[in-house]
Image 1 (cartoon, one colour):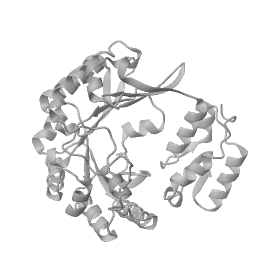
Image 2 (tube, helix red, strand yellow):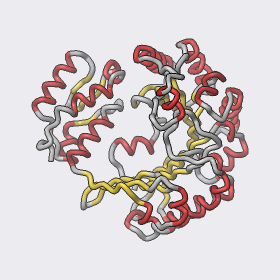
Image 3 (cartoon, one colour):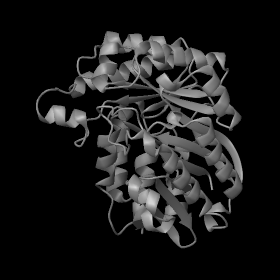
Image 4 (tube, helix red, strand yellow):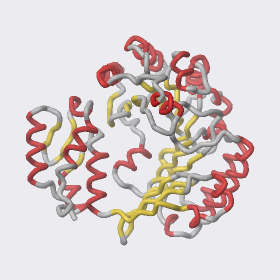
Length: 385
């Protein structure tokens, strides 16, 4: 089993753009950890524990709110239940929680990759996002990562913010690059309907950046990072050679993983087919029920669905998708309409199709979502089954 994902549903405050499941009631943190340990131990001797675990990702929420005792509980339970042979153990951190002693402590538990949401070094942007940290705390956290000589880390940036100029974004990128990050995730600000930002946009209090501005920001991110040797390998992810994220890459290729904690997703592929499910996004329910009771949205996935997902996710990466893999793993053949579409896009230099591998070009990656939907719209429901 390549991966385990653990969702820690606690934050100090709500970021304006975030639609993940979280709570700010810190008094429930220890009861949650106790319930998480119970969920882990209920999997002992199940078929989910039959393969070595290659990656662990602790996300949220804000996992860095957990203290040493709580992390000890979680890792002890994982070691008791699973065959842990992880090459990558990632933990998300907020800059205001990070210091050298904390980094040394989580490294002792086996965490070898930190994921930190810097987002920006401009105070007005962080205030607009309702982030819990300020620019100086981000700088101090990055300095702590260097002093602790942490094995690997990734930093997040968000571009396309209302009022964010290219000059502001360029300063953010250059300031981050001074810390020589091996990996950077850069996301365009997304307006989700059930968030504070979504309500502000709906009420006309915030006007989102237009498509041209966002595209210009994307171009700046890609070119500045590439010049520094941090190369794009997925639409939102950039890394130095050999520093790509293992855990997230497993999602894109349909590797098995188990999600633990409220709202965590799981994917499992065995001889009976592929299944996906989610834990109920309700901490109170999670605290009071056993594993099978809080699993919901169980879905048996058809080969057609899986193939289209593989196309969608693979085309967002530098590796693309091979027609051979689609045929052998998913019994899926590109149909005549899709082949005609590919020929046209090759002429327009938005995709390449060489040696049976379909990839986006740099030009295509800028509009990858549109292109992928266009390609999939030409997929016959009868073909590929």
